[in-house]
Amino acid sequence: MSKRDYYEVLGVAKTATEAEMKSAFRKLAMQYHPDRNPGDHEAEVKFKEINEAYQTLSDAQKRAAYDRFGHAAFANGGAGGPGFGNDFSDFMSDIFENFFGETRGRGGRSTSGRERGADMRYNLEISLDEAFHGKTAELKIPTSITCEVCAGSGAKAGSKPKACPTCGGAGRVRATQGFFSIERTCPNCHGRGEIIDDPCPNCGGAGRVTRERTLSVNIPAGVEDGTRIRLAGEGEAGLRGGPPGDLYIFLSLKPHPFYQRDGADLFCRVPISMVTAALGGEFHVPTLSGTDALVKVPEGTQSGKQFRLRGKGMPVLRSRDVGDLYIQVVVETPQKLSKRQRELLTEFEQECSKENNPESSGFFTRVREFFDGLSGST
Image (tube, rainbow, N blue to C red; front, side, top):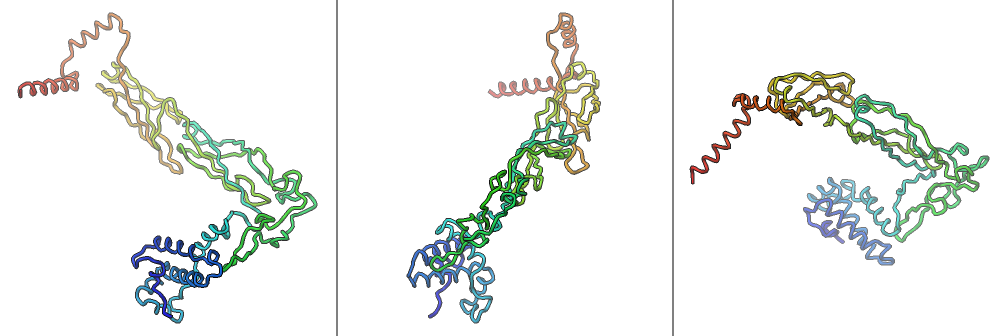
């Protein structure tokens, strides 16, 4: 009896993508699975045919050979022949999960019963100054640690866990489901492979207890908001002597009253008097390094002018580079003037010319010309 075309078996076109073939295979495998069709020989034959077709077409090299030579490409075992590969195992795991509620090798539990501890998260808020200099932080963290009494075994002193009689210490039991033989987690020891008849009174058989630990954490200079620090093995202790998880410290920065940060650069706004802006002058700005930076204001400085101080910003994490400090000046308008101050400003205004205020004079001249042009065109 000649074999049917593999594309026809799966019900897909020859141009079908890998995802389309997977979807078609999953649907057909579920439909014709022997456990869903007990005693149906025809369904069993179709199931084998579907698997053979998919194993060929899901492999790029086998598919290319099949497209060129057809079934003859695999005659006498050519090209390795179709068989039960990894993809088929993955799909069967999915099918078993639908049928039996679990898959092989899943559950995250070691057959020895020693489970890895959970990872932990700790949120730590630091100041911008601490991010600039770096610091060593002392953290008090409540977490599970290995029980000191039973050394993590979970058994009372003088006793020890014994192999599970149901699974023989394997943690899994084999069961036959129609056409296939599958493994399930042992219902007696829940996959641990061992049971404790006499549990440790200190930890109740878990092999771990909750305690508050003090950890010293080095925070390097230049960390940014959202930086994550991983401390391997400092998470929750594993169950019954299993390896511990990891501790992840997430950093957040407190707002600074003077500086705003953008990467390695710092920004700030400094108010200056109208006289300083007009005549020129200078002022000092404190930096995070602990020194003062001198800023010279040239004559005629306008509000919003930005000055750049190189190398006065934040250090770059794990680098020798340093960002810059940008200072924006804001010209402050005098308030609550005395009579004499008003007289002086009035006299100053009368003495001013277009050269003294080129931007405002030019603006109003352009506005006037614009509206004059509109009235002239009507």
